[in-house]
Length: 376
Image 1 (cartoon, rainbow, N blue to C red):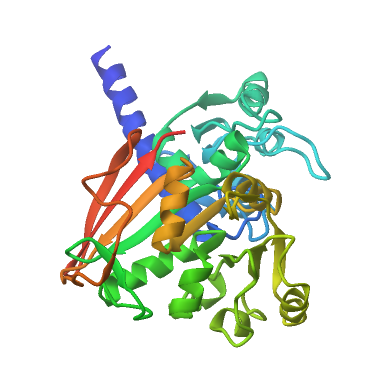
Image 2 (spheres, rainbow, N blue to C red):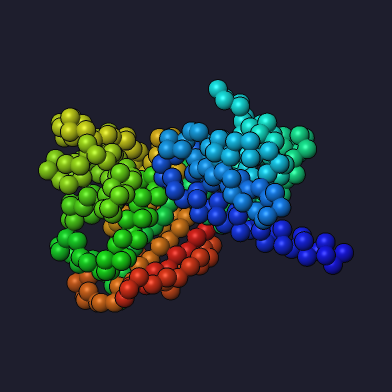
């Protein structure tokens, strides 16, 4: 019995090791798989000389093929009798191609280790049921929390019918996020800014208010070598369509999509001019003179967006917090003060709303980073 318990413990440790690798793999196409989540799959076999990875796959750009299909294609006949590690329950519904659960069975996979459960009613529990009915051993919920964090956008969109909202703010040492009338103010250093670019690369969209767009004239793109094509869609809350045609946002619209959330009463000539430049519009409802955010998020989900990074400014950040629409809070802290003429942050590390738990702390040079998340 002691030997059996040791074997079980060793197998559990091995399962966690390979699942962690699959979760890391799943990040490769985060923000690029449309309405599908970016899932990772690793196929492992042991012919007596120790476990060996024979196939890997991640959901393809655009959402198809799925990760399981990619990994099985790479493994070929070596998949027979092997173990598949999947970060999300294999799909069970038929489209033009068979479900991934059937593909795993047909490939001769002997064991499937899964992480997060899929809330999609076409899948939930049914993928595992197909596997078990075919005699495949199934182990569920290995590193489920970590996998769910990685695909929180997909899960939020499935359960709440809106994208996951991450609020990101950079705060000075005296709790300010900028200086009135000064445009962009550098609060953090280069290393922290590069981390923000990585956050953008994994999001479906970045959202700011028209005040930030006019004051800072930002591009809101990913400016890292080799990742420029990972820039997500930009969304501007601009009820009256005040964004200039000469802005950096409009000038880059041929490379990165730009959406303006505007109201029906906005100037139709301004809209027509920006549409000719390639800007896309989202008609919004208004509540007390501002964009109705819950309805806007529903519209973004209908466009296939599962994750939105809210980057500014103070008024927009406060609006999302007041509406209880924030799922993740990311705060960068720089070492320097801005002073009395600075714009106060609507939130800081000492005033995180109830229901959030701290996920991690990090440092980027002289800057600090803290992240909080609200469980689904």
